[in-house]
Image (cartoon, rainbow, N blue to C red; front, side):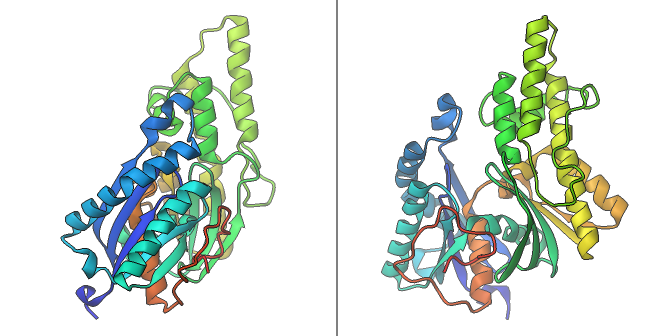
Length: 346
């Protein structure tokens, strides 16, 4: 079957503060449009759920139309609708699922409620082709840090380890606030760290050698806070670039070491790094170095595909459809804590 004969999947993503709509055939990305409400949350230092939900309502129709235009397609060309059913913010998810139900009903097309986190893994196929089976995936986003054994992205995803407290993205935001850097913290810490010395401070490596694949960044965040407080109390000249670089080195060190160890232990030759924090330059560079040393293939989507978008939901939808899974019912419910081992919500 040629790619043009594959079904056209429209994916809708509204789990947090981005309204994303993507159009995908197989592993080919045809349209990808995102409307972000991040600027509306900056003054609060984090996402306000009610503000995000209203922004999704306002952005949904224009974003769908832009995605269709960029793909050179019409609504009538769409063969199935995939939508993030969870995890995420309750109100934000409800907007996306309601819109997807309306489109599915109006077009007479099947609806698939899919897992936001697994979508972050599936999106890599739009850049690098079908995932090897199995693969190890390191998912690093604002609210989640997970290591996954992915035997089949549509049907068989197993959690090897997860965050026990602050996820990496949360730690970046909190440390950025300590350093007087804007929200969201990830890009600003990454930028500041390029001018700093990562060896200037030895911050702790949470759960470094505990024999698990779990992650903890709360202690690291606290260590940075104490360093800043002590420096201010002693009148020291605090270097924001050095603190940012040392903090970022600790995060990247733990993430990449555990990910490579998981690949070696499970005899898996491919590591996929995905999620918004995967756009971080130091995590990418250290992962490249360690994968090369271990003889592993490293796959990391380009930064635009790492952050929340509709393309990743369409990519997972395409895999679910190809696997012949039963569509979701029109009474599909959202699930704010949808577990990672359920790529399809129902």
